[in-house]
Length: 565
Image (cartoon, rainbow, N blue to C red; front, side, top):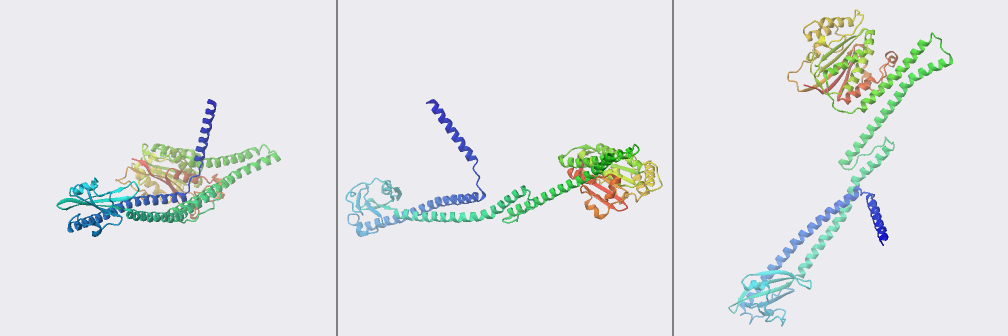
């Protein structure tokens, strides 16, 4: 028996588990059913409240009206009995005024029945002890309603009177069946109206649900098609404002996704092309070496070509990795000091010092922030911006030209931090009588001046064409009412060949080159400015460029509210 009981309990628990699982797996109701049930619930609750309140009002009004009527009839009958000489002479059948479905009893001062309109012999002489009769014999009108055992609804009314110089009363009992019938008729009408309203609500809810749920369901189907790879799918915004907005947002999202994926595909194609070129060159070299072993005198040149291909591959892969690192880096507010940014600039210039000397370039570094200035920037992203912009300027500036690197607070000149002579770093070799020499000599002479502004002015006046749009007046003075936070500006200007206007909108695209023929001489990958743009946006900054063919370029990066006082 115990085993049977245990098996039964296990079976019951298993069935309950299956039931719960089936209940959990039950498909949720759709929007249409939610709207239908919501409308029905609202109508039924409203109908219930209306029915309850209406029944109370109707019942109280009907009873009040019937009570007033019976009181008036009772007083009329009492007055008629007195006028005809009292109950001993006057007869109810002769007086009349008996209410429909009613019964009238004439009582003496002790509550004994003197006359009955129903002519019931058993009632004559019987004493009524009803509360209404007792109050009437005390001189008060009284009435009440009762549900009798047979289910009928009645009203008892008693009014005081007097005859034969004694107190008495007239008692009326009436069946309120007509009131109940009227009440039921009204309630039936209310319920019928509720049913009709429910049907109308069902139709309206179905129509409204189609208006709202239709676009949503279409949006869901379109989303599944997009998830399956159909990026060209669009929806037609329709329905109310909310669904139209949702449809427009969906179309905007799919357009952006399509553009992003297309951009990624273009990036992959460009990356594959960039990697294929050095690989193809190296493959040709290896094949030629297999076909004909090189002479010992040819080995250095072949190895140099192979090394060049390896370096090209390394540069492209490093550029791609830098770009991916920028995108993958979390956008967090990090803090560094002004000296950290200055060190980044110094490192970037030092890393290219050999190329700077080989090309006889004059490099001017202007610093307008102090070492201890708090800066809310990620040093890793700043390093990518600084190194790529300086690298571009050094590579594309012609021999004997100049490069100016500026780091200042927004709205302030270089005098806001340190003296020009302390912040100036010039890397040049083999001075020649050109703009570079003039720029270099003016910088060295001005560094002995006590005024930091005079050094900058002398440098720029000595070589006004070295940097486009650069003049002493171009640097705004510090505002005396500067706020606690201000922007940081990093600028790299060069005297290179400049960029034609038609190329400016595309120079920040990945693998885009203004002049493809210069790739072999400069060793560029076409990713530097794309990395700068990504790093600027990731760190909350923006980059702009001013350039004119033959006059050089100015790349300006602005980080709003990056400096703290």
